[in-house]
Length: 450
Ligand code: UD1
Ligand code: MG
Image (cartoon, rainbow, N blue to C red; front, side, top):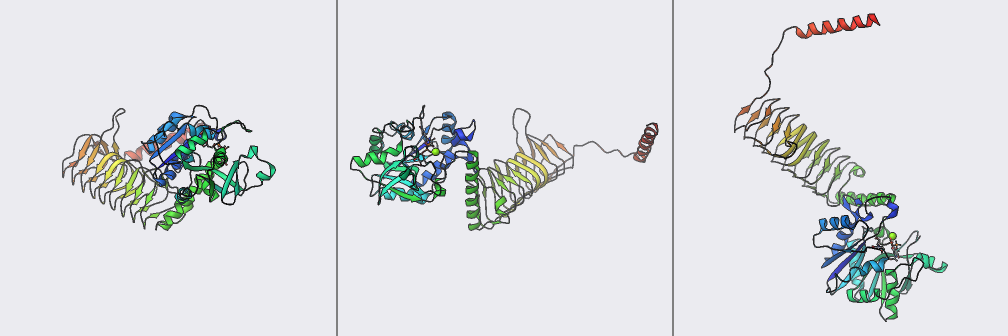
């Protein structure tokens, strides 16, 4: 059976108090709507339709950035969840199969839950995902008759008895596409909110002799984000899960609560992550690496046995081979470092390649930017770059070449050569002492005057 996802993401999210559309607020480095898409991907959907409204252009860009096959439709006025789903009708006109409706601001539905939802479709026409709410608050209530869902009643429209129900609507729904769109045609807006409620669908289905049911999931999965406080809570929940998974996968962390992962961070077994390490998106770390305290990594690859930090920054395009060493206050961007290369202190390596076993001295800078263009620095294998070398790109330093400390390299250094480009030292005997004497005497005279 093929599946299409419809992800509702048109709402403004007033309570976020933000210029950014709610579904674009990130959790672990990815916008919420991308989390919803990722959750839905466990169903291997044939089509994904995102319904955008507020900030539609930005939402479209984020959705396409994650998956370029996504179709984005516009709901220019937010007239309710049923109206939102109806916006996908034309796009899915030729689609045969099940539709699963997800919310863009409910990022944590698990794959097991979605599979249970689809499994329940074997016996029922409409399946709703419900949860037992600790505090049912303003959620829609699921009115059950045994296994059958007779209807959903929105809080605003519910009687006292109905409000006492704690089994609530998560918003997730599965149904055959054609059936669902036909039922949505019959949804009206004669209710307390004057909205077209998707939640009217089960009751309408029942009047047509169709069956509806609800499957239950853990409340944590249906956590919706409506405010910054809920966003922070969602981030915390997500980080807790990522940390637990990393520990289970054989990663050592002395203080896991201080390590922040991105949604797609991959860490190999027997890697050690010291306290206060932060990951941006697209980081892969092989087995047996050490990420020392206070390092920040994004868009990079760290190979087996490498030691990074403390206080290192790896930026997008940093490709580190086995046993590379990156020390304190070193920044690496868009650069490959071959096996065993060492960059231990206070250095910037950007738009560069560094050959195997090359040693880069403290305070080295690849001067990659001329204010308009970026240029590359290529350094060979087993080379030695003296401390405080400025490599003015584009420039090449050969295998087993050296640069003297303080050298400004502006032209290529061939294999085995040594480049020295610095002012010659002059030493004046006794001059320092004479200067100190003069300056101290001057200070003493000033003190007497005051
Ligand atoms: C909805 C459900 C409620 C459920 C709750 C779970 C309805 C009528 N009610 O209520 O039963 O317990 O979610 O969180 O469905 N959206 C659009 N276009 C619209 C309206 C909404 O895209 O015109 C999107 C929103 O951006 C949001 C989602 O649909 O992602 C849910 O809308 P929201 O207004 O939050 O519905 P609730 O009142 O929370
Ligand atoms: Mg809501």
